Amino acid sequence: MKVYQALFLLFASASAFAPIAPASRPATQLFDGKANAIRDRISTVKNTKKITMAMKLVAAAKVRKAQDAVLQTRPFSETLQSVFGGLINRLGTEAADLPLLQEREVKKVTLVVISGDRGLCGSYNSYMIKKAEKRYNELISKGIEVDMVMVGKKANQYFERRDFPIKEYYDCGQKPSAAEATIISDSLLSKYLSGETDSIELLYTRFVSLIASTPSARTLLPLKATSLANEGDEIFQLTTKAGDFSVEKTEMTASEPAEFPADMIFEQDPVQILNAILPLYLNGQILRTLQESVASELAARMQSMQSASDNAGALESELSMQYNRARQAAVTQELLEIVAGATAIEG
Image (tube, rainbow, N blue to C red; front, side, top):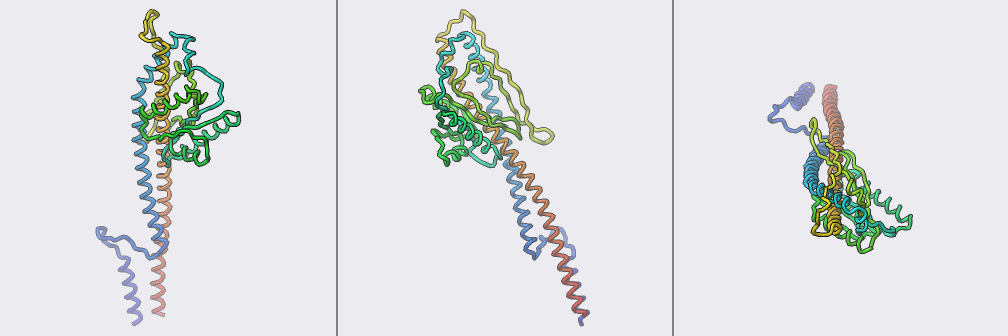
């Protein structure tokens, strides 16, 4: 009787491990808390990987749109620079009397800080915040009064919590427009021309490549005639190479100054024309830095999401190995219990 019971148990255990047709094969159910927890983690990691890959592709699409916007504004910038260079050559030292070109004793500086509105972009925002805080402390140590204009939520939240002198705040969307740049430039122009500030410095992130960007600073006001006429440019284009994203950089030389005949009669005084061109140039520079900062943020987000996807893939492989080991241990434990039960019955 005991032998029959042992054989019955062995046949029952064998039927439990018999192969099932793939079409009707149910998911393996393990009565082990550790294995089930690992299986749930694997499912969560897979879903996270899908999300991060989708965010990377979305950022790549936005980078392409940002570079198209830069290319569309390029002809206007070239023409403006050419006319400006021609007028500077025509006027000579007379152009130095324009308010936006006059340097004065610096007693107060306005820092314009461009950051992102959102996170999940690696160290993009933190580097810019450190750069702005360092520059602020440098000016204060020299006895220069400083106020700040924030473009972007992340930097504004950081400096606002620490009671920095923030005078104005603007959102930094994913699609900078000429209208947004005009609002910022008009406000800065009024502050400078009214004597409220003696110098305006712009802190933004310069786009270098998909894996690198550099926090940079430049003096926005007062302008320098020689640098405006001879300033070159760089155009970055996002492409694909061997299935991966890559960036092609094109160096753009400064536009040749327009040639005005000596006997050419201007309807308006050339100084007035130059005085009207300078705010347009300032507006274009702010728009360009906004576009470059957004492109740097999106590139940083692409790289961050790629790293997150790679880490998720590595974690998935590690968890799968742990799950298989736990599953094998559970199966081995069940076999040992069956054999021990049969041995006990026979004994």
